Length: 340
Image (cartoon, rainbow, N blue to C red; front, side, top):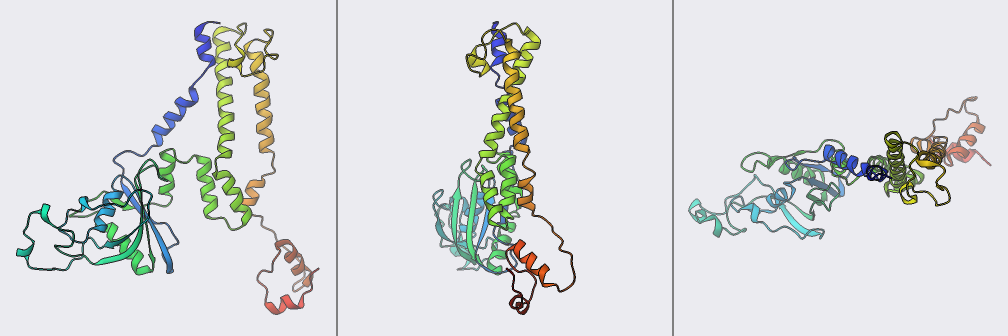
């Protein structure tokens, strides 16, 4: 077989397409640093709140919050070791109290100690986690701040992060849009579309079945299945192009075709050996899709209307058996009913 045909029979198109998709969706190096409250809605007080930052200046933002004074060079503040939890005091980057006269603070900046200068007001004693990109959820440098969950503490930290985006710090930082952390994880190749959908389902899961389905989808097994189908389709496409360009009278090696030795005995040609594999792949896809939309029903639930005579106990018993629990009925009514 001509060498050109053999090269076509061993395609690497999927790697090229993956690289192109990654390049099209990857986050640029000068992207903004974003932050958001990742636990709860910030309305009710909780014991612990988690605030996340991601982006090229996330570590610099943390150094700004760790600095005790306004005069100290915050870039020199020591950061926690990556992936190790560290208990740190966070400080308001704007508020200050004079700890002495101006003459006391005219020393060279290199000699300024972190305990001298204009002292800042503390925000909270928080647990801080640092992640270096690309070994993070988003693939970028990330910070997680585990603070106390009161509204005052949470709002104080969020306001401090907003203020370091203005003079004298001028960091390229802003609040995150809804779902932007996941969008950046997808853009950097940390999550595929299937995993993104699974993550969204897991966040809003109400039942254990919904949770299990989302976790099965999130662990990558569904993506692996689809990627296997994709590779088979690309290989079949490459062989079809080889037939168009070079004819069907050329025989490929068994390794090129990906079939057993007895299937390609020299009588079938290129297309004759590939067609059974494509038919088999089609059957696999049809079987996978013929699930009566069980996944959607499990994720979205089923809306059922129970219609009958008002105050009929039999309808309450029926709904109880369907839902396996009472809903919207008084305790007295539950005691009066005897549902078998």
